Image (tube, rainbow, N blue to C red; front, top):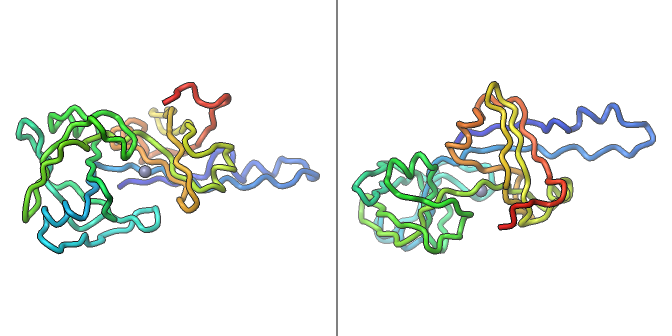
Amino acid sequence: MRQLVRQQANGAASSAVTAVTAAPAPAAPTLMVSISARHVHLTDEHVERLFGPGHKLTPLKPLYQDGFYAAEETVMIVGPKKRMLPTVRILGPTRNFSQVELAFTDSISLGIDAPVRHSGHIAGTPGCVLVGPRGVVELGEGVIRAARHVHMNFRDAEYYGVKNGDFMKLRIQSPQCSMVFEELLVRADATSKLEVHIDTDEGNACFLDSATTVELQKYADGCACKH
Ligand SMILES: [Zn+2]
C-alpha cells in the first residue's frame, strides 16, 4: 500500500491571518490518502477451505485503520479465461462475506468485467476462482472495483460539515498530474481515522507518490450525484 499524508491547504498555517478577536479555527485533521492495491476479504469458512481446517489468518502488517491488517496469506485469483493473478494479498480480519477488490487494470488482466461498487454491495457482481495451498473456492459473486471513499470519525465529519453517506471531493496537487476526484463516499463512524481509499489506477493517474497537497472539499450544495 502506498500512502501520502499532507496537511490540508486550508490548515493551521492560515490561522496567523485571522483577527485577534476571532476564536482560533480548529486545526484541519491530518489527512491520509492511501492506495488500496488489489486484495481479498474472506470469510472464516473460506480461509479454512483455502488454507486447511482450523487455519486462521496471520497478521503481517497493520493497516492505518486500527484493528485491520494485511495477512501473510495470499491467494491466486483465476478468471474465466484461465488468466490469473498469482499472489493477491488477503486483508484481515475475516468478514461474513468474501470479496475481491481489483483496479480496472487488474480486471482487464483477468478478463473479469468488475463493476465499480462500494464494499459490501456485491449482489449481481461477477465471481472468480480463488486457489490456496490447501483448496479452491469458487465465488459466485464478489469481484468489484472498490468505489473511492473516505473514512472518518464523527469529529472529522463535524469539521468538514458532512455526515455518513454524503459525498466529497478530493483535490490532489501533483507535478503535471493534478486532479480532483469527485464522488468520494463519506463513511463516518465513532472510531475511524481520516483516510481516503483510492485504487491503484486512481493513485497512478494523480501521481500520488509525488503529490504536494491533498485536500478534501465539501460540495457547495450537497452532491448532485445521488446514488
Ligand atoms: Zn476503505
